[in-house]
Image 1: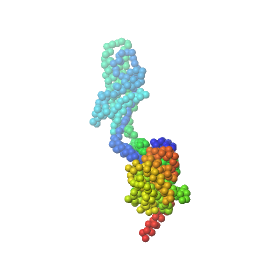
Image 2: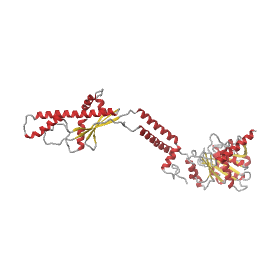
Image 3: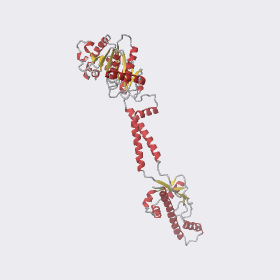
Image 4: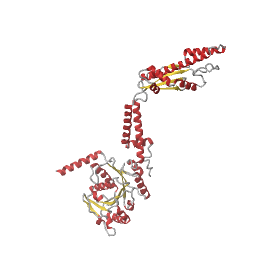
Length: 496
């Protein structure tokens, strides 16, 4: 009978649950969305554009030789492992000396430290290239830095290899062995041409696209992040919210008919209600009349799952509708914790039944006419929370009063304590003809609702139906407009 309170409407899928949570917590979603968009805009306004250009240096390893004449020349030798060859080339190209030479070539106040910070030399994976990437505030500047460094690094390598080749040639200058002819020729080539293992494969070009995502993509990502955070936050709040979310959840927990929906009214209580509320309770009154036998006194217990659901207001407005239809109505305030009916209808010095415990009384002794609704008669059972100690005796008296009411009333409406919070109403529930449930979406406590459902199921009580307050009225706009016109004509007649 009772679905898992943590997952109301368990027939819905996770996407539906997420969307429902986001609709109900739209303010949280909107706040997080605006926050992420605002943070993105601030970040974009502070972000300095940067560009990266890359020059590529081709690595052509020198073949390994058994002759030791070339052993002193620091060049990239073929190790049989391409990755290792690239690491060797990268180590030769990445040096502070190269940055200093490149800075002098550029001039314009460029320092070696600035160039070293702006340039990254790394192997291009899966190829025989070393990338010289430079980052600057413009594409042209980045390309100039990358090209200057690449050219300087190659020039330094050529100079170093030429110097080493000259020293090697000097070392073997007086030797005429035939085995030195080939190495001598190779050294002359290195002396004249420089490092043959490194060459510029592709100079850097000015990049027109700044680094990082485009502004539009940043904003799109901020919107997505805001929605994701909003959805997560809404779900977390929903999980921690113990309130019933919709009238469907009320009907799923206790599956009895919804008799009427009463529209939300702010700043009013008691019987001072607008025409739309009057019409809703007139609809409820007509449904009760259709099920009542002629000359029958119908005793109706009105309860709710939790306080604040509109139970007392429902009792008073149903009583108003019944009295307006010419019915004899007695309202009994059996809320032993917070009695409020008497004050709502203008009764002040009323003596409750609890004050007369031990004294033989009849219904006439404790029944009073309501000043604000003269045909209505009110019985108050208790003064406040302390009288709950008298519940067993009051329950016995209530059974007798309800029997006595058959002769003097067409309807007895009993305003009881919230059944989901305290079980006082169970003491007299077997003496009534019907039970009406009052619930208010976004107010009714879900745990109290489950408690009430369990108590009703265990006592084998099937309520007549739901009165759902704070929701869309079940009456049409046509009848509401008609009622408003009638009230306007009545007010105009009274003024005349």
